[in-house]
Length: 106
Image (cartoon, rainbow, N blue to C red; front, side):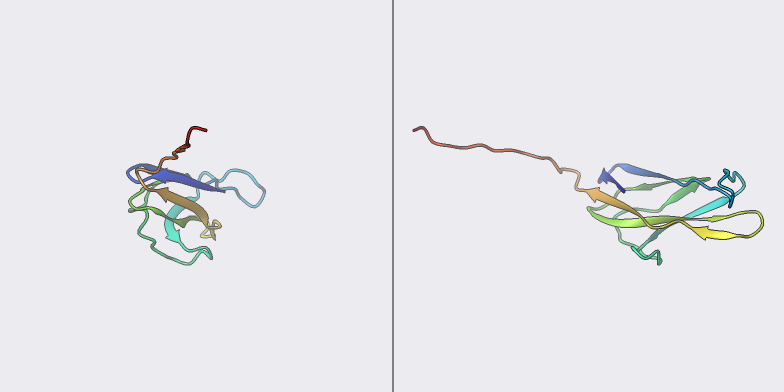
């Protein structure tokens, strides 16, 4: 699964923090980063700075291309877990689909 936005738009990413029993963990603190497909730190240049706010984060789409983001949650006991990389695609601001039909009279 991935999300897409056009240059000039803003992505919103949301993490769900569950404890080992599957219950929501409202005390987990999320940090967000751009990563590569393996989860290693990366910077594609396709999104701007990620602004985190709890389990959500926003990032401006700044150039056409694709990459990945991930959230890392830390609970009050110090346990840390990272999400798998989540794909995003930035489309050019002018991306449109056109169908041009031409022909000649018979």
